Image (tube, rainbow, N blue to C red; front, side, top):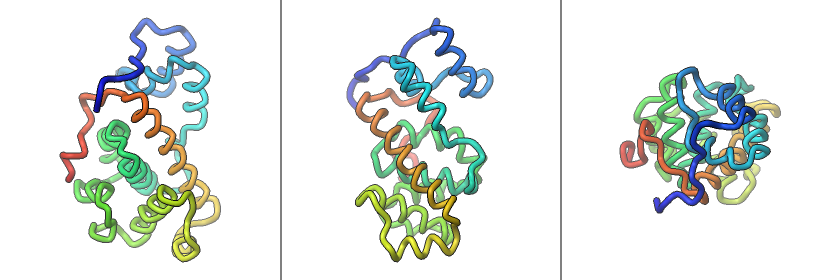
Length: 184
């Protein structure tokens, strides 16, 4: 990646920004470079945090993380993919092989459950066509309710936006986060 286009803010932060960071970051962890970059526009930062889908949703944590990792991989956002691998993969019970399949063009080659493979295919179709084919929709609805389908679509869209920001602003990779090459 080339040089960062928008330098992350450095402390001390304005009170409103500091409070937002404190609400979203685990205790003792410095704000991510992505968040510090977005803090140049407090409204965008606040809206991102307000629309955040990292709470307990209608799908399992493991499924959420597979969707996020596949979306970030398809968008080439090594930054966000690596942050999620570092911070959520263990909690989501994702093995090294599970993580690697999110980078594989053919999700059928991994050892994921059938419904998890369908999730990766949904991300792929949304990425490639901004839609989901009838056949895939029918297959997904054998496992997921209407509310869950909306969450799947929303997660994919949200992480396209995050990927656009990390890629376009050239957010510097976090030192603690693994790289694509570690899993290919």
